[in-house]
Length: 178
Length: 161
Picture 1 (tube, chains in turn green, red):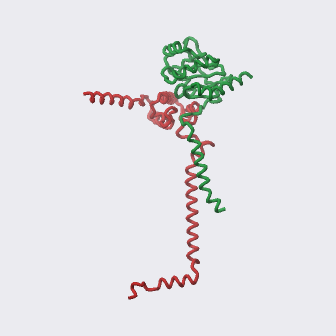
Picture 2: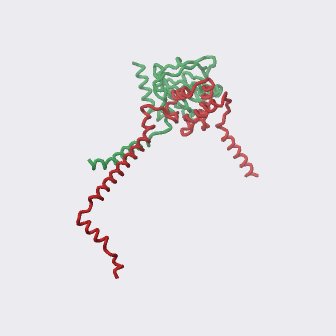
Picture 3: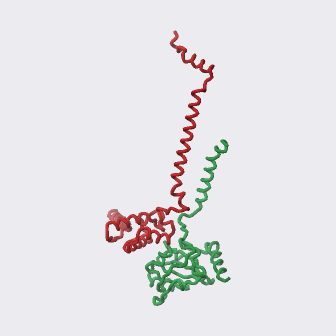
């Protein structure tokens, strides 16, 4: 019994060390979204292409990606060709133009091709706030019911899509197909 | 001349960055100002992770300050405002986490560890003291005691001459 007690500090040390070690590989900048499992927040905002057209949460039909972007966001430019590629492959992508100017956004979409099925003009960032957006680009995955299922923060490049995101999207598409 | 110019430019840059986190809000009362100060100090900026909303220059922190101000003007209390932000950004935004089943270790862990340490130390000290007491009473056999007395009563060697 006494001898076992002597091993206790070692046991505590091993437990603590493994706990700390498991934390080493984690990215502290990665926040789990508070909105996973919740529907897209209600909104009523104009479209980027035509300010006369008002869009609401009902217009965003999943399974789809909802991509938060802006012309002032440098990484969005890196991401843009990948989104173009994806939309060509048949992935539905909705855009949320976050705290941007409409003219600049329209020019961007003309010059670099428009991958968005619909593009919401969130000039004040209100929808972004409701979505818990804290920077661009951020991409939400919504299912057929319009419920947010995943969130990806940062640039989607080909590798990230292939290794991490494509399976998620495929799962959502399968779900909708059944 | 060049140095002067560089210095001037540099100071301009510094001034600009120093002022970035200051926005002007007009509060209705001193209490509301205090409430705003407290809230922005207790809520964490989601973008620049080790700063609170009050200190951060990030655009999102500016937005959140504006939002908090708006909600204060509407007469919402601290709890409502905190809940509003937690619903969007998660528990992450709270520098003062809520007390629930997943955070009780965080809240009471350190105190528990301290208490455990003090108890352990007390036990060790008590046990040592008890052992010492026992020793002093019955440690020496008669033979040993006689030898000790002999040693103690013996004149020091160097004084014998």
